[in-house]
Image (cartoon, rainbow, N blue to C red; front, top):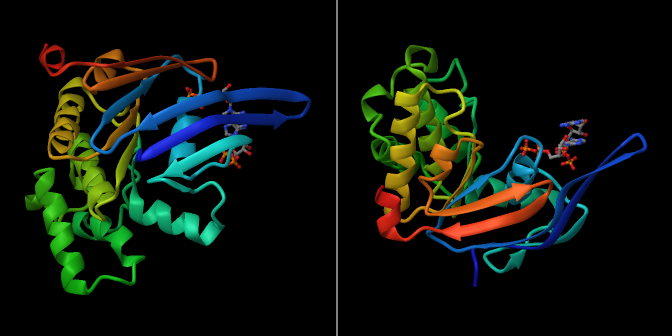
Length: 234
Ligand code: ADP
Ligand code: ADP
């Protein structure tokens, strides 16, 4: 059983009399523990694909199975639960809340859950902050951190609820090359520890750091290659 399975997914945007086939018959399976990059030119459907996988966007035709269960047919409340508990999002713009501390930002997704005590939440936040080596900044506010540190806080927030998959949309798009590499190294380390990561990027150097590289062109999946361990070291 695959973690993610897209079967013949089509997404058509209708604007006035214009049809845009953002996703054109996508078949894609991703297994637990994979690190997959999705790349291709602007407008090829990368963000649309990621938002379909993240249950942020509906689609026109096809099926989406998460852990073997069809999620496309779930009601809105159940989709929201899956989105909150099983999927972690990392955005280009970090999307941290400015008047909350680092600790509060990372705790936020857990506060929507009713299955955790305050003590459990606290332990999970501390563990997530340690995973991305930003625990010493837990009392700081986002504006007091560098872009790279803010993105590490955002990664901690994405993984704090122990989601089944991390979805990252251009996670290094707002960072200089040094901070971008730090964030890429964090993602690689999370992958080594077993996280499943799907990352959208138009930057070939970021794409190369994933173990499996999927390419889109004009809404179609045109390439899908898995690197051997040795090649990835280069
Ligand atoms: P990418 O992330 O690769 O740049 P997108 O997934 O954003 O590509 O877009 C794929 C195609 O769908 C593009 O042609 C884009 O203009 C179109 N598109 C995306 N979102 C919408 C929307 N909400 N309404 C209409 N067209 C859209
Ligand atoms: P859905 O409602 O199918 O989940 P999205 O959430 O992807 O669709 O898009 C929501 C809205 O964003 C669209 O209705 C559209 O108004 C706007 N939008 C985003 N990107 C584009 C684009 N490239 N062209 C036109 N509208 C866009």
